[in-house]
Structure formats: structure tokens, C-alpha cells
Image 1: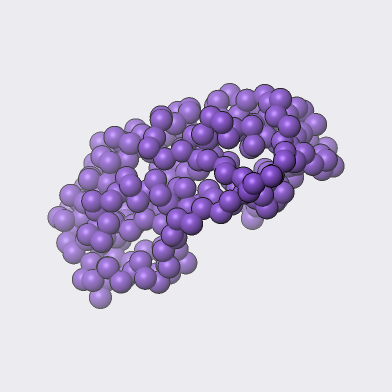
Image 2: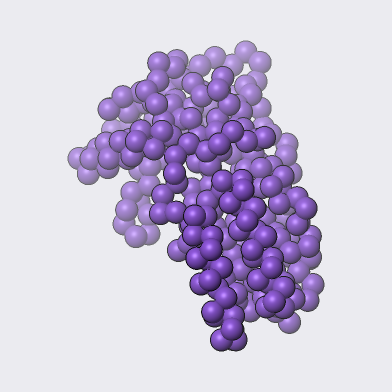
Length: 252
């Protein structure tokens, strides 16, 4: 269990960095060292697929989500020869998740060879850690811009128009590798010391509560400086055991 002093530190730290936990992303991400690019196999030609049929409920949700993406600046109208179809997948809570079917584009995309670490090997560095926090980035992929010349390749077709992404969309084959590259660059000096990153998940681990306050502040300050944003409702702080990547991490 946490000490009372730790319970008091947690809200103070979060309050100090509340700008890192916005209710919504503030808009287009800044220019970063890592951008999302789509390199095609030689000879690949643009592919445009037929629009998938949708029921009345799905069409209403599609119209709503397109308006939201436009208002945030994440998509723009497109005249691209590319065009992926869209569909909805029902989530556990009953809401609808918009999915762009990029399978055809993925088939002609050169695969990024950036290494994704084995999850079990990530935990070898935990050692004698006994205090843990987990930070989940808010719509992490949307915090990376698409390289300007590759924006047309992200185009998708709907009943309400033809659009393309200015931020990295979900469903593209190299998206996890690109985001892993970004996170490794951002937290490079802290990896194997008190930070584990896996795509858009961050684990902070420390040997003591005092040390953990310092480590957590460093991570939150780094996110602030890099203009990377987290979703507070999916973050957990100052625990002696914590779920992370399908495992329960605990102190020994």
C-alpha cells in the first residue's frame, strides 16, 4: 500500500503537469525528427477500392467522426488517386470504432525493419524496482505527422467525401515501428534506467517512493517539452503492482 505522503505527492505532480493530460489533443502535432512515411515497392500504382455499404447508424457515426477529424485538422479533403474503404467495428462498450481498410496499401508498402522489442525481454531491467507508474499516450498515432509527399497515399473514400490524413492513421503496416522509433528517441537517455517504452505505453519504475517522484517528474517534463500528450483516465501512478502489456508487474 502507498504511504499517506505518497498519496499527497501524486495529485500534486499531476496538477503540476496537467497540460500533459488534456481532454483532447490540441491540434496538429509539431514537426518532429520522426515523420510517418510510406515507401512503395517498385512499380506500385495507386489503388482505389469501392465504398463499403453502411447502415443508418453507421452513416450517422461516420458523418460525426469525419466532422471531428476535420475540426481537429487531422484530415483534409483529398483529390488523391488512392482511396481505401472504411468500416466500423463495435467496441466492448457498444460504441463504434472507425477503421480504414488499408490492406491493399499495406500489400504494396515496403516494410519498415525497425526492431520492436520482445515484451518478455523488456522486463529484465526491472531489477529491485518496487514502485511503478504507467502512462498511456492519448491517440498516440495522431501525435505524429505524415510526411508531406505521402499524405495522398493515406486517402480514404466515404459516402460523405474523399479525405486524406495529415497525422499517422491507425491500420498502416509501419505505424507501430515509426512510433517505437519516436519513443526510443524521446526517452533514449532514460531507457534501462527507469523507463520502459513499448509503442505508446510508458512504464516508470523506481526502487523507492522518493526516487519515483523524481523519475515521474522527469518523464512528465519530457512529454511536456516534446508536446506529447497522455490520457489521464488510462494512466496509473505509484503502485506496487501494475498491469503492463498483458503482464502484472510487481515488486519483490
